[in-house]
Picture (cartoon, rainbow, N blue to C red):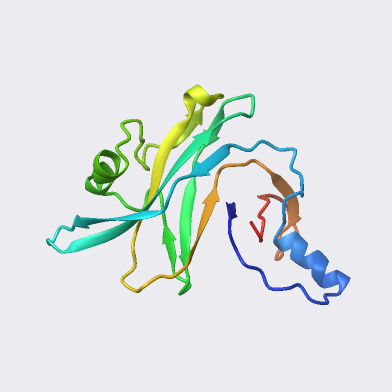
Length: 181
């Protein structure tokens, strides 16, 4: 998972606590040797659409483009979530099922005929710029005022690490998570 997250200072930890933390929360290598898709985002914006009851509903949307330069086709299944400054998590991509919201973004806001619906922007991604995928993550905006948010994206790289299950002690293969970026 990639994203912006703030982590408190580790402080003075003893070696046992550090080793236990590493086995529960594996982190990626500084320089990965695993595959990674090129993922770029546009400008976060908002749109207002009339809801089923006639009341206006506000949505955030984030356009993105993903290109596979890994040398082979990759299965792309993104999850794009936001964390607001109040601690609320909003699931993205397929959490908004309204075709009305997506159609408005595609035709009037972004005016991009190549834009794929978030519900269809998953599957095999062929290698090369010619097969780039353009889509948008959409979230229903909260009622409260939001001054800051963090976007988290998963499914764009294949780095895994061996870790120990903290309960059973069994060896597991888990995605490597970067607590900083």
